[in-house]
Length: 302
Image 1 (cartoon, rainbow, N blue to C red):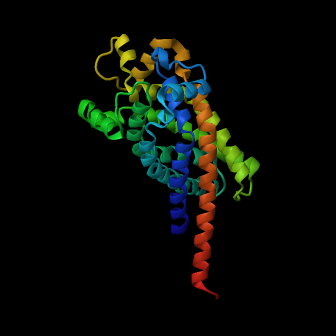
Image 2: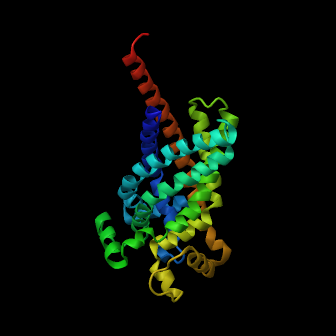
Image 3: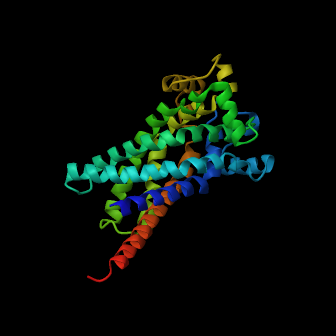
């Protein structure tokens, strides 16, 4: 059991880092497209146009700004996430379905895993999104962390935590249930099958991303504390709380404002979750097989 758990932790860490790094430029575009009152120079009609203009006007590496803090947070966050998911899913499946696949167990396991994941990842998300914004005033990662801590306090790193959970708990519940449902259809024997993991992951990412976009827009506003937008609404100080974020977004653009950046969000999540699941399943399979063979070799013939 310990062998399998260690494999899940290692696989989860690798999957998390790759998931966030491969599609990171699209995530940068999504953050900018969700801005309620963007600078005229940062208004984009599509993901491709946004990436092209950012590279042309701000430099080749600009879409990667904030990637370092994301990588630092993603490894431990996803190691906890996958290890917790597997353990809770197995435990609840035994209770609910006598060890068989249970959509309720999958959804509940996703919720529990999300609480741990977001506790680790939320501060990294705050710094990342501040670095991604157009005309970001921070020179580098340390400058951003110090400035936020000195001007807004440590609480600023968790200002969006409740909104993040409100978004990610349904996101991950839908995500895991969709993935497990697709696996039932494409890979009923639950063997290592790369094609089924990629397709299931992509479908799970697309569905969950589209459904939870309104909450992601609110989370972005709480993380970035968009000064121009808040000043125009005569909001002084710092915006806090999911309810206030919802009201502010609605006052800015009605219902349509809640779906700003949906194209970028879905484009980012589909390959990201496909990568995460395919890498996770591969490393879990490879590491478990390697360790089992090592233990068998150590034991020797009976």
